Length: 326
Ligand code: ACO
Image (cartoon, rainbow, N blue to C red; front, top):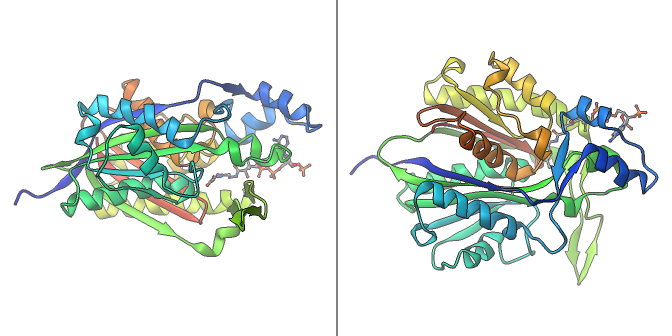
């Protein structure tokens, strides 16, 4: 039997059209009696703008155009897809999964479709799961998507979090291949840190119990993120028998430019090998890595044959890395 690997054959993304600059956030928060500034946001995070979905636009609505673009880039039709994995922390409903709702919007049925919930590491988790299913022979053509409407779970009275996040979706088509593709994956979680980044509200007895908005201890997240992004990168390189010198591109979770540049420096990577979209997208959680990948593919930076490191880190606490030849 031909050895099975998986390979990304197409990428796509979608941002809701409503773009809010930092100046727009200053105005929005001023209306609530809260002060912020473009200088503070840019200096601490590198964020200059984010996109927010209009009321009524759901995670599956954002995922649909991203998925269609990835399918078009791969030269595939929705009918060719035999696995749909959606990473999201802002699903359309408690159930069914956003993946099932997306499947229906794509006009297909029958193939397995499910969500993964690993917050900002969700896309890396989803990609690793799809890779394992393809290598096991359970799928040949997977759609892996990160999609979020994080604006729905932000507390606009909390300036320490609401300026950081945005909405969007990114997608890849991952197909069975005789040659790799995905070289190695590395996934981790440490639930002891669940409380430093969470949205603790829950639905019970027909009511929302607890606070259904994002809470974050930014400094605790920052300290953990820097360490785990470096260790995951080193260990996935080791698994694949590669070194930092083999990397053409580092595409980490887009939360904060200081964390991303710190990771690149620790790996002794020149900063021009770091793909950063956090300035224009903010932190789009599970969507951030596939959004950044699609931007870099479409602007010609990431080219066939390039070695790319994708890294996620986020609530859970979760983290992981996928090393691949594009
Ligand atoms: N505008 C102006 N001032 C602000 C704002 C704001 N939007 N937010 C906070 N401040 C103030 C604070 O009140 C504080 O003022 P004080 O000194 O008078 O008390 C001051 O700025 C410093 O606040 P810190 O919280 O210490 O700022 P810090 O330098 O730690 O930056 C930040 C905060 C940007 C959140 C940083 O900690 C960070 O990026 N953490 C990591 C976040 C992250 O990576 N998340 C990823 C995972 S997301 C996910 O999984 C869903």
